[in-house]
Amino acid sequence: MEKAMQGLKLKAKSVTHDHLLGVANSCLSIKEEQKTIRILDVGCGNGDLVSYLYLSFEAKYPNKNVELYGFDVFEHGAKKNDYLNGVIGKLSSFGPSVPWGERITTISNSERWPYEDDYFDLILSNQVLEHVHDHDFLFSEVARTLKPGGFSAHLFPLSSCFVECHILVPLAHRIKNYELLKSFIRFFIRVKAIRHFPDLLEKNMSLTRLSESYADYLVNYTNYPSTAKCLRLGRKYKMRTSFKYTKNFYLQKLRSMVGLNPRRTYDKNNTFADYGLFMFLKYVSCVTLFMQKENIK
Ligand SMILES: C[S@@+](CC[C@H](N)C(=O)[O-])C[C@H]1O[C@@H](n2cnc3c(N)ncnc32)[C@H](O)[C@@H]1O
Image 1 (cartoon, rainbow, N blue to C red):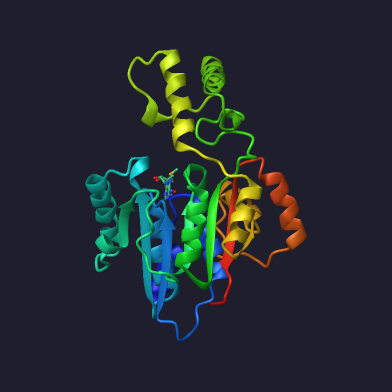
Image 2: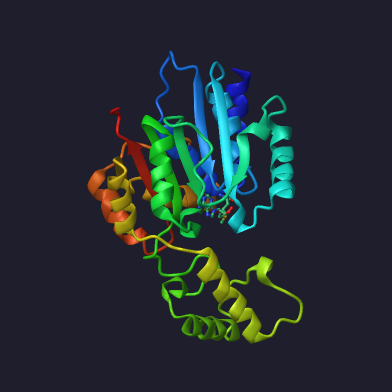
């Protein structure tokens, strides 16, 4: 009872975390006899989503063993020791008895995920898929490590999104010609219509160097998938794939803007309305890719 009350009082650091919790609560139905619930956060960054989900699920299922896992990849700057120590240290303050050293890890982005087949009830990611180098590999690992009947939800912008989501320059992620991209970004820096990226700023950077640095970031660290690619890969790996929770993220955002409490679970979907809204929202910002692994062995 006490844990459940704590769960209701929990505050997420980002509306994206509230949204993914809303999706998780809406799709998961944990059977009485199931003892352990396993959840994976792919590309877990600083561990904020892991801690939020851990505390929420501990509160919701006080009699179950809730196991939260997360990993990130070396190629995107997760420095092995510093990074891991920082995340594990932070998570230990939320769940001191949890062996976080066994739950959070770093691997290479081409390496098989360090989990058995059919292991997770739920696999999530937050703003990761637009950075993934090899989507086919990621979908194959989701399909391999999900339990039959398990769910997976990924919040991220598609290639159709009008504005590039990091530097907020329209269509920058669609330009494949490097010189054109650099000049395009340079123009937006000149007219001060760009969001600067603190990690890439150095003292006294020239305009040319700065535009080069942003262009290099987009070329090397982003890879926006299209709607068709996500649907094709979902089907290839025998997962039921849709974008049905996309609108709920925007409703969650609206609630946060007007100061309402976040929704902890979502109402039943209306397929046609959800599809219509997705067709519009995929140009605006993030969508929610939602998959279920077929329940056959
Ligand atoms: C914008 S950050 C988001 C981090 C975290 N999910 C959050 O919400 O704060 C993108 C993350 O995706 C990770 N990433 C990139 N490629 C990946 C891959 N193939 N597999 C897993 N994570 C990946 C990066 O290392 C980075 O931590």
